[in-house]
Length: 338
Image 1 (spheres, rainbow, N blue to C red):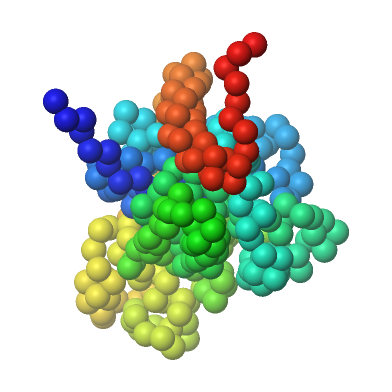
Image 2 (image 1 turned 180 degrees about the horizontal axis):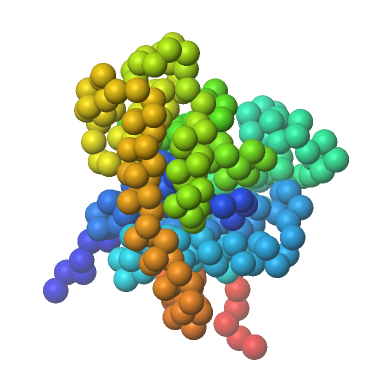
């Protein structure tokens, strides 16, 4: 009997800095839920990436487990997708070192996020911050990923991963698979409620700019009602109305409709009625996620089993690519003898 054909692999992850917010859900997690049946999905919480900025150890540990529980609460099924913590699979770090020997200083220093974080953290411009995209490349390439769903702001990093893989393959043959980049057409870039020119962030110093997945009902309603709007009262999706366009996009994502449908629905309504309905929609969306999160998070032993099984499955898949890379560059194989 012929062995079943292996599904294509999809890899994506989020680093546990700040609290997960609706931009993460609309732009990433919700797409993972859809893709988990058609792909072998590897969905790490990428805790190693968080270390480029100083973290409180207890907060990092707690938040990492919160993210895992939120993955599950949002609809990721551990029986259909591989959920794990990045640092539990050593192949990520091992492949990073090898790939760093094929990444060029110039291209790393030109990364937009490196330049941005270097400006914001002038007292801690560390080597890890520069090499961040190489670790991201390893996260993807070590599973032979066919598809990588990312936000638009991560496109540059994935292009680098493809460039490094292409460079490696030009020397050693087709060892590394070049992943395809997937950016959702709606919801890929949710903007701040307070600064519509800036992307909504997990780590925004102004918490009123973001709707976090675990925000209480009253907090969600307050943030929505305080959201910045454009001059005038038209609920319209136009380039000269970035604040309203952002709120319309959030409404469409929260209700599973199109921006045009939402715009038509509120054509003759004012901002007040629109915002009240938007708050209702977000509360209705997040309430079951929050309930499921608390259920999952309270079952610590079950969560530990999920992570152990996920790390084991991820390690088995990653070991195949890592060994192929090690063989290609001439690293001697490990001996099984003690």
